[in-house]
Image (cartoon, rainbow, N blue to C red; front, side, top):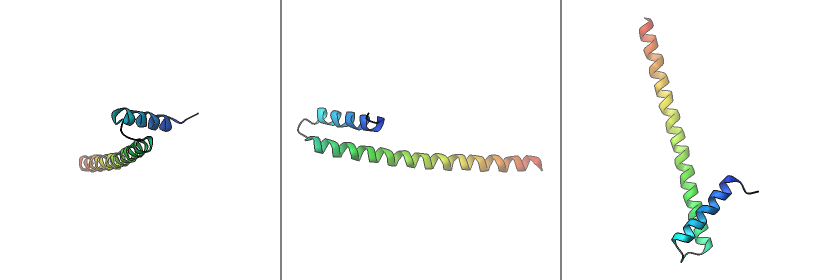
Length: 70
């Protein structure tokens, strides 16, 4: 049974072939793999940014709590 990622990749390849009938299957596969790599890179970047954001919020909340205790 194909994994979810494999099925998505296959669907992306089919979409590329439908949009570009002049492309070979190999060209569509390479384009789909490039697209997936870029998407994974953006996802990792967003996760890092999100962690940084919550870390900053946590620091601000702790600093504020300390200020009100005094």
